[in-house]
Structure formats: C-alpha cells, structure tokens
Length: 639
Image (cartoon, rainbow, N blue to C red; front, side):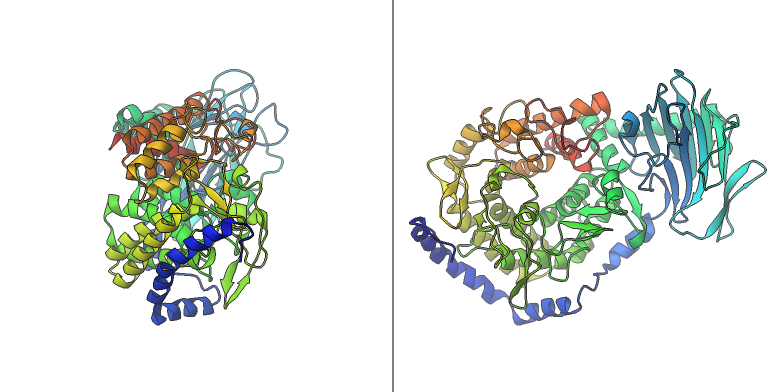
C-alpha cells in the first residue's frame, strides 16, 4: 500500500467508500469484451485498418500543396509525387539554400489555404528579402517569386523531382524541364525568367537557373508574370473572403488555419496526409512525428475549415494505438513510446467533430480504439480510491512491463517539467508516479462522459453503461481532492495523503465535473481564475500560478502560456456555465496569438506568461497547437 501517515486513514475511508462503485464497473466488463482485448493483444502489434480511413486517403491524396516535409518552397502534386522545388543561391551564402522550413532565414510564413489554393511566405537570407506566392487554378500550379530590390539579386534554381520513389522520370531537354509519369502523362515546368549562368555545384536534379532581377513566374501551364499575378490575386481574394466570415476574429482564424496548413504533409510510409506539430520536429524524428494530444488538437482546429483534414488527423493518431491498448505519447518514424500515453483528449475531440459534421460512420470507426484506450487508462492508472495518476509502464498478463522512469511518467502528463511534479517519486514496481492528479482524474471523467455519448451513436449499450459508471466513479473520487482551506481541487501525494499546493490550469479541469457546486465554482473563479496574482491577468493562463516560486523561471511548463491548457480550461469553463470567465480567457488567448502573428508571422509552441511574447527559450516559433488560441476565440464568438 502507498500510505505512510495519519492521512492514510482518511484516504483509506475514501477508498472504501468508492470501491463499491469501482468493483461494480469491473463486473460489467464481460467475458466477451475481455476475450476481444486478449485476441487483439495476441496479434502482437497487428495494425488496425480502418476501412473508411483507407477510402479517405484515396480521396484526399491528390492535388498540389506543400506536401513535402523538408521544404515549404517545394510544391508537390499527389498522387504522382511530382515536385517543383525552389532553391536559392544568395551572395551571402556559400551553399545553395534548399529544404527551407518555417522561420529559417527569418522566414515569415504567411497565409496558406488548407487545399493549397493559395500560399505566401517571405524570408531574408542576406540583404535581399525574397517573397514566394503560389496559387492553384484548374489543376495547374502557378508560382511567383520576387525580391524587395535591395542588395544583390539571388539566383532562383527551379528543380524537378519525383518524390518518394514514385515511378517515372524527370528530364531537362532543350531548356524544357519536367517529368514523364508511368501513366504516360507529361508535366512541364514553364517560366518567363531570364536564364542565369550559375551552375549548381552539388545539384542532383535537373534544374533551371534564373536571375531574380525582376519577378519570375513558374507554372505548369505557360503564363506571364502579369497573368500569374492575376491568378494569385484571385486566389488571395477568395481566401480573404473565407477569413472575413469570422469578423473580428478573422486574423485569429487565419493564423490558426495557416499554421496548421503549413505543417500538413504527405507521409509516404503509410500513404497518408497528416499534420505533425512542426516540420523541424518531423525532420528530427526521421520523417514524421505524431504526438498524441497535439494531433487530436490538430483535428479539432482542422474542423474549423476542413472536415477531411480533421478526420485525417483523428484517424492517423488513433490508428497508432499500441497492442496493449493505448494511443502512445510519440508515434514517429524514429519509434513509438510503448510505456506511456498522454492526456486522454481523443473522445472529447471526436465528439466535437461529430457535433459539427454528424457523421455516424466516423464514430463507428473510432469508438472501438477510443474505448480500448479509455479502458487501458482505467486499468493502468487508477489508484485504490479511484483517483488517477500518471505513469510509465503497462500491465500485460498480470505483470507491469515496459517500465520507464520518473521523467517518462512526467512526459505522459504532457507537462514535461511542470513544478507540480518537482517533488514526485516513481514506483518501479507499479510503473506509477503516485500523485493523485486532479487534471488526469477530471480529464478521464470527461473522456468517459464523451465516450458514453459516442457509445450511444455507435449503438453499444453495454459500453455506454460501463462508461457512465466510470464517470460516476471518477467524479466521486475527484471530490476527495477538494481542499476546503485553499478553495480548489488539489493534487495529493498518495504516499502521505498530503495536498500539494502547486496550482496550474490542470487544477481547473475539475470544472468538467458535474459535482462541482456553484459555491465552489465561485471560490475557484475569484481566488484563481480572475486573480492576476494566480492564473488571471492580462496574459492567460500561465502554466503554473504566478504566486508559485517557479513562475519567474518562465521555462517551458514552468510559467509559460500553453494553448492546449487554455483550450481544455475553456472547454471546462463552458461546460460549467462560467460564461464570464470563458469570455475573458478567449479574449486573452486571441491577444496572445495575434501579438507575434502580426509582427513576425509566428505561431508559438508556448508564450511568456509575463508579456505574452513567444520568442524565448524553448518555444518553437511555428508549432501548430499554438493555433488553438485562435480556435478558442472563434469558438467563443459563435456561442
């Protein structure tokens, strides 16, 4: 047992009180359901194949877009993989500049339509700023490249590729650049640019070298600069009209959509389109990386403008469920974390997608793995009294296997270096970090509640009954974490029974619970949400209370503002009927997002809790879940 102090008696009483419910749930787990799980695990890692996902891939793996992960200046057509790669030789650089990613050379990624119909970016490798705009019209790609006229003009190098081993050949014959596909189709790249005498020293692909003294048009159908400008202007006008539908939140919507679109790629190993958090992270992981809650949030943001992109991301992350039954923290080219998951937000996001699109077939696809994952959390992360904790390790055949360490357990929380876990320990026998966690307990209850609704849609009454019992159990256990003295639900050391007064937005996940009284909501609001010395203030919400000794560090999860925390708190506030607090959080979220989007074109991984800026230590400058700040704003405007 975990208990070592006089608090053990109190905790043991709570355990006994809740254990009846806990046991009744287990009885509802039928022999047939257990046999299904055992059969799945026995297949030793056989990949789930979701039929509708395969159909969706075939429908969406087509058309022009910035699909190639290593470079945002490569325009690729699917499914054949033909690529127009733009490279640059600037006088300030020794080597050719290729494989550009957001924020290289002070890049400012601009607007990006989800379907690639319009894109724009600018960067400055030396004294000259280079701007690239593109549009797709009637299936043809049009690109305009120009400089600001300062400094010595660079050389534009236009390369032709067939990516990912796609069949066919590329050619350069008599100044004509293009490719011949296996189907017999011939694609040519046309340009009105003036040839340069520059010869690439390390090029491996056929290319055209062009002077950038004046704007250069590059296209798959002959077009002058003026004609290309007109096509691009028309595409931009359509995108502006799309943005305008969101009124005062048009810029927030544009930032959210553009960041997600720039980070959406084609992933060849599984023949799919998906949205890793950032291109640089994918490159560092050998091709792609899907983090669990990050990718579900990508699906949530995608739902604002593309049902297909929302579904593609939801399918991609859920399909990665492990043989032991959980969606892993990391699913990447470089490997999978078989010891841990991350915050269970999949059912919440999936329910939101159903509420918007009403697609019962999508729910029938995702419900089985989501239910399996929920059961894994229940069986692997529940403490004796019904509260829950994070861990690293999974039960298999009565044993705990793949046990990691304390840091891996912290990674499962998603809050890698949060001060909440500074004094935590790790139990190698159980694979648990024995802290009764408000955030996980409340989030699990919400996962069960959302999943119960999905079970009804999927016509699984047995699962619905089990899930409703799990909600009841988790919310009852959560009540034991209320600290009357401090007026908030607090984490508690499961070894000593002592409350741990390190307050973060995850404590506010308690507001998902329907057991929280109006009086408690008022206390939490006044003392923490609206209090500028705690979680309130101009820039909301810091990842640890402003009164915490770690807050001045502003290092990663030690005080910085994180969009996923804001998003989950916003969801909880909305469900709790706390309209004023939800509105203030939405307004602050929009302010934080637009600060650096308007100034630098950045959408950050996290932002300073002190001044709302993003350019600081350990904050990727173009990380898609920063766009959740915009999602909160546009969602609030629609309530």
